Structures are given as C-alpha cells and as structure tokens.
Image (cartoon, rainbow, N blue to C red; front, top):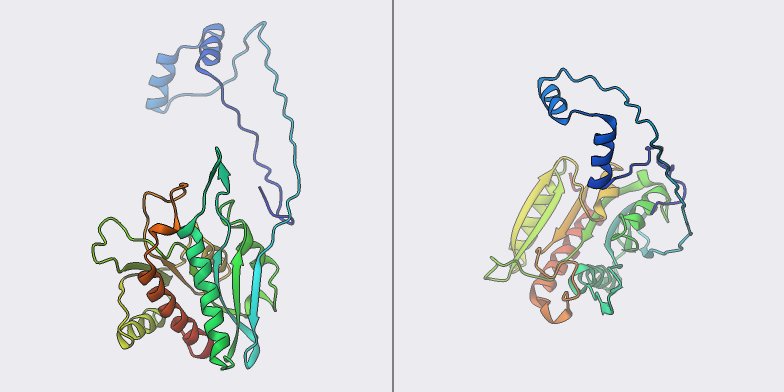
Length: 284
C-alpha cells in the first residue's frame, strides 16, 4: 500500500527461486560452489555472467491495483492563538477479521482512542480556551503503515505543519506486562531536546499522586511502529505513551475483559495534564 502523492518505488523487482531450480542452474552452468565460497571468503571473487546453453527463463508479472478511501477523524478546539497547534492522537484501526475470528483490539488500540476522546471531552467541559489550538485525532491505516498520521502531516487539516508545536500519542495504554505485579507500570518516550516534557510529567504525577510507575525514556528523534513517527520526521516534539507489550498483541484474544481500567484511567489523567501544559505553557 502507498499514499496518493507518494512516488512509486524505482527499486528493481526481486524474485526468489526454489532449491530445485538453483541446483539445476548450478549443474547446467558448470559452477563450482566450493571454489565460489573460497574466493568469496578470500575477497578475490570476481563475478561474471555464465551462459547456460539451451536454458531460458521468463518472468511474467501482473499487478492488480485499487484505490481505497479511508478517513481520519479529527476534532478541534480553537485557542487564543489560532495559528499554533498541539495534537493528541491514537489509531482507531486494527486487524479486522481472520479465519472467522474478530480481532477486537481492545488494547491495540481501542484503549488509546478512548484516551483521546476522554481528553477531548475533559477539555470541552473545562470551559477554558487554551492558548494554542488543540486537535484530537483518531488515525486510520496505522496497522498498514502509519498512513493516517503520515497523510495528516503531508496535508494538515488546519494550518501548515510548521505551525504544530507538540504531539502526544496513545497506543496500547490498558494492559500489564508479566513483571508488573503492582499493575501500575507504563512507558513514555519523548523528544530529548525537550527535557521539560519529563520535568512536567514527573511533577504532575507527584502533585496529583497518580498511581503510575513510569519508565521515561528520551530519544533524539523518537520513531517506531506508531503514529508519532510522522511528527518526529517533521521536527515536532512528541510524547509517546504505551503501557505494556503482552501475548495478546495482534491476536484475537486482545479482549476488553483483560483491560486494566485503573491504569488506563491514571494514564489518561496524566495525559490530559501533559496536554494542558503543552497547550498553555512552554515545553522546552
């Protein structure tokens, strides 16, 4: 899959052959594999084509393509400065169905989507107009290659991408790792050049006595298999939340009955306060 507007790869087509075919080529071409391995190890090997008389090979490729329309879901609260934006997002897609089984994706990533919607509701209920405008985003196509968030950074719904000052990502915020006996561990990755993000996080967690044991990591340019990657690539500071990896990841068994509601609630509380600081204060 690829996004419209992205260049088609010019990489050559790569094919694989079976061992039976490779043995036939070796035999008919009079190749000496032992000598090949020896020269390759010694660095003296010189490649050259070998003509195999009477042997022909042909490759036929048929490409069937179709365009798929998918949608991000975005809500907006205008700030006092309508030309600066902060974003909180989570992907709403999952793996669909396979062999008659529904992959519900309770943790991955219904939990993150609920986090975004809950924070949006809290900001609306506060009645306070933030200094920076806030976008609340449910991304599509994350499981297919982070396409929803990438598309947004290519074609922002509001303003220019250079107007975006912060992004927070929720992905899998509702489960416990095997070693999490207290059931309160969670991970945060943030952009290293913005150390105040860690200061804000620790200060808020202590002030409100949140029951979270945080593993906070900084990276020069945080990227990975979730939607904060597109924002990092556009030089936007990020905070990426994840509670735990577990055996039900990308399995039909990722069910709502396994959700740790208390941990999820604590993460959403802290996420709300982090976003409040990003929308109303300075993060560097």
